[in-house]
Length: 289
Image (cartoon, rainbow, N blue to C red):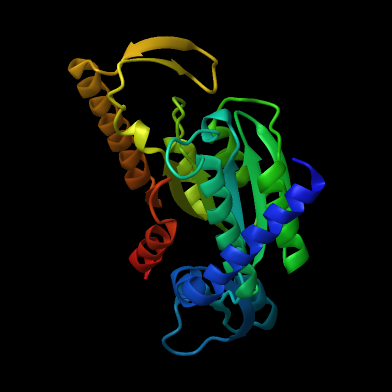
């Protein structure tokens, strides 16, 4: 993308998503994600009724009387966006590409974060870690993230969600809220990695998909291509058995994905490219309150 066009798109995304985060998401974001972590504040002498599990044994031994650790809600969060940049996101049959919706959702979450004085960082992934942007604050940082979301060119076409999750677990030492933005088209088993990550962090899954994943158009013979492997084949979309098999495949895939999120205790939301992601995110926030 040429520089002038890129800057224009960045500005368009900023105007739209900054407005959404200011006018619609501000309160909901704060209540949905604030106060989920506790930070050490100070030590004080033990008082009747204090939880013995909070006793600081080192300080207690030093002063020969019991002291307890005092914790308080963390006033700011570290927010990480795990953004799928594999080739399957470069697809859309109605309204917009999946990657365009991912960009808007990511930008909206980023602006919501900085308005709450939170740090925001990004992990771009395919079947490898493509780029890591460490969490920081500020509008300049957000605009840099948006530019990367719009113009980033991955080195690989495929997807490995487990790779991204394990990287998050290893690279972020402090607890964070992590939004995974993907179509989750991945045959690797990432449930165990997701479960481990969600014990350390607060992981939220946001699935973006196209309506043609649910149902094929009835247009007769059609050539289809796997965006990640390049495999091509002809299919007869007028075949009722094919239509039925495709719908069953999609329902089975979605059920398996939902089971993974449930077993990993991860909140999730799915939004189609021709649907309103604002409503989907508000429903997600409401579910967490």
